[in-house]
Amino acid sequence: MSSIGPFQVRRQGFGAMGLSHNYGHADEAESLRTLERVLELGINLIDTANVYGAGHNEELVGRAIRGRRDQVVIASKVGIVGGGEAQEGAEGKRVNNSPAYTRLQAEKSLKRLGVEQIDLYYLHRIDASLPIEEAIGGLVRLKEEGKIGAIGLSEATAETVRRAHAVHPIAALQSEYSLWTREVETEILPTTRELGVTFVPFSPLGRGFLAGASAPEDAEDVRHRHPRFQAEAVEANARRRAAIEGVAGRLGATSAQVALAWVLSKNVVPIPGTRRVSHLESNWAANDLQLDQEVVAELETAFPVGVTIGARFPENAPAQGPS
Image 1 (tube, rainbow, N blue to C red):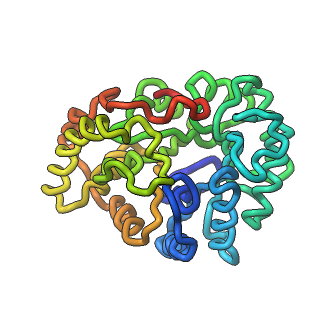
Image 2: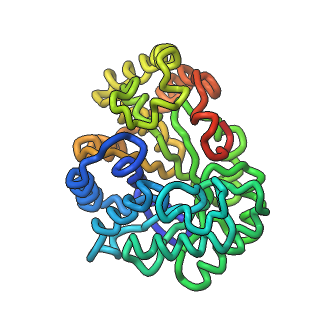
């Protein structure tokens, strides 16, 4: 088990975003079956956000946990202004961390989730127009009222984490981390370890790339706009997957399991997501895959920091952390 603030969670959580956001059309019945299997496996951290599917994702999670609230730690986020109710109170901003906005959106998230408390509440992106101290102050008040249980940040710099932590202990920092996105090792991971902040990697399989995915077929798949998934970048980056495939062959595992086991070896709590029960079960099995130091070194030699061709997000995406 791992600690996130006052909560004990398993080695992996589940990122629910793809069940209703970013990766093209999703079948709701299949999504609910996947969430059911998440709970059956004992995965007790489910990650969502108010902006995913314009609120649909939180509603989906709420339906899945109904009657089983005590089995799961719910993490949600606020700050990115998307469609639907997330636009209310945003004052025309693309990222809004104001206490008034976070309070309004927290109330809406609580209703969609059907819970009295969001266990872990992240600032989804950092609002550059507002001092982080003021933003955290608003979350502290929500925590004092019992509406949230712990405070997290997503895609924040090391300096921002330190400033926020000086106001109130930050339970978790979420950012992208995988073999092809290792930049957080420079400043972010050392900072979280120093401060006792749990690091929660999203996209630990490189949005499926490290598991063998290439250019997406679904026209609604957001990866069409991502520089790393353009044809030339895919071709260049794919050459490095041979190292993962080689390790997988020797260990009798899948490439996805090897890539995920590498992330798990860093003593973090990744939140891989998938729509398919079979992929969920395969990801969960990575918990039992132990990589020795020689294998870890082999993989890191194939994927040194900064080697990946293409930016993580499109130019017009909301402000990111280190990339």
